[in-house]
Image (cartoon, rainbow, N blue to C red):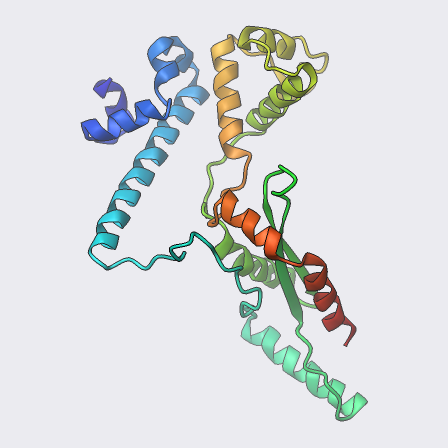
Length: 269
């Protein structure tokens, strides 16, 4: 076992290795190490183990800092989270800001003393889903005047997205893994239960378009198919700072129709 983890260029404690075992990351490797002769599967195991070790160590460090009174906790004792503030300053370049100011001056010259200090990029956000058993999601609304450079719209979106996401750099999961996860979930929904991995692999390998798309190529064995599914399963749900329970509470207490109407009203000015 220890020789395996050291090939990942990582050292670990016995406690950390037990944590990896509890999370099931090494279970498939222990049962069938030949699965990992496939480079993609081995790389995913290596990266997953590395991410889990990083998370475990970060959690331990935060716990130590919190006990020492050095860590600010974002949520209160009731486990509630306030909705993020959508009025985050939009990062415009000096040139774009100067042009915006000049445009406002021109508006005042043409229209007189009226309210013309309109936001060039106006944003809002609200949560949805969750209470209908779908995965709760943050939704970002942006209204952008068409002359704003596309690169700056991209940066403005990032400034809104950043405080919501728990993973700023999620792993680069392949299209194949997502397609496999979709296939398995659709099979489970259709049959009411998940068929065996061997049956699922055969059905995948028998797909009529397997020769048409790179992601649809057949798997060598059911273990490799299952490993691809696990990759897609982990990467599909978005990882937000707020937990699902916190998101659902926000959804129950929010009024998205009112937020949308207020957002639209500001655009009519």
